[in-house]
Amino acid sequence: MSEQTPAKIAIAHDYLTQKGGAERVVLALHRMWPDAPIYTTFYDPEGTFPEFKDAHIITSPLNRVGLLRKDPRRALPLLPLASSLMHVKEPVAVVSTSGWAHGFRYDGATLVYCHTPARWVYLLDDYLGEDGRDSIKGRVARVLRPGLRRWDRASVRRRSRYVANSTVVKERIEDVYGLDGVDLVFPPHSVSTDGPQEPIPGAERLAEDGFLLSVARLMPYKHVDVAIEAAARAGRPLVVIGKGPEEARLRAMAGEDVVFGQDLTDAQLRWAYAHATALIAASHEDFGITPLEASAWGVPTVALRAGGYLDTIVEGVNGVFVEEPTVDAVADGIERALGRDWDRDALRSHAARFSEAEFARQISDAVGSL
Image (tube, rainbow, N blue to C red; front, side, top):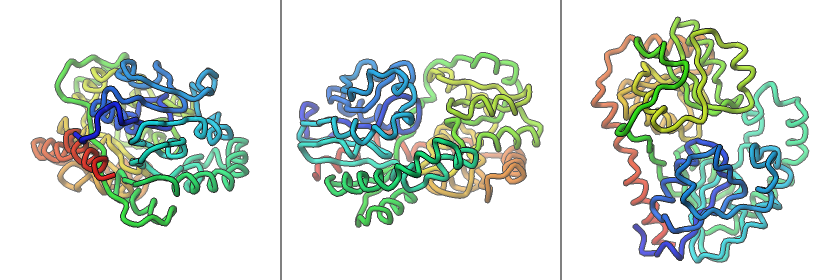
């Protein structure tokens, strides 16, 4: 733990409206400094983790608009203004961001834990997906992008120190922002294998022989559609955990052996990993925490050989790689993963290297050096 007292530290995050890896990082920070206020543009108690309900959360005025609170992407043109209205007065702020929180106004020193430079500025085509590139949203995003880029880079120049969550993000930060010496601290996996389990409604019928698992937001770049088709090609049932704008399209293409679940409790997530035969992770991820969650349960991952998965997966130890996010490649990866005799203890040992205790130690050291 840092020498800083909780009263002198603030936590900041883009928005707390969903359940994902970035939000779990904020939870880890909250456990480090439980009395520190959390500044965020939007907070939806029903959309994110219930553990935030005991936190002191300070939001932007836009949080009063329910339509925007439920989907902050609708507020894209307004988010630079909303961010500039967030005034953090504490002497030290630990900032978790992938695009907005580093643009808040800070009176003190800042440690920016960057999940990625803003996708909607620097990786717009990946963010929109093929179907979204020529959509109204895509055209609006392209019009806004030059202004957002100027705002983003001006925000970066005002911050004290940057930390990246993966090797690929470290390289991206140094390339996009021209920063040198960006530190690297891997985020923790924090779904404990201890504790109760609760079945996912509709998935109980798949549990006896096990099922493939996808845990991802239903966004175009996550390639959940590829996971669905590859599972069908391999003749294996699939449980899809996540929600997002692709949900209706994915449900329409899914067969009877695909079950969807969203807004799950940790008990339901434990049940899913406990009954999974393999995790499918076919997206370009900045870090990709789900293979570590799976490894903690002794479950291997079929992953795209790219991005953050190069940090979290050792081929043959806790997963197999595929070279491209196509149905053929992923279906082949599924067969290779299921046909292998895995050392479950080795998978669990690999996951233990990415513990919350190690994350807390490194972040505390970084805060202490500001």
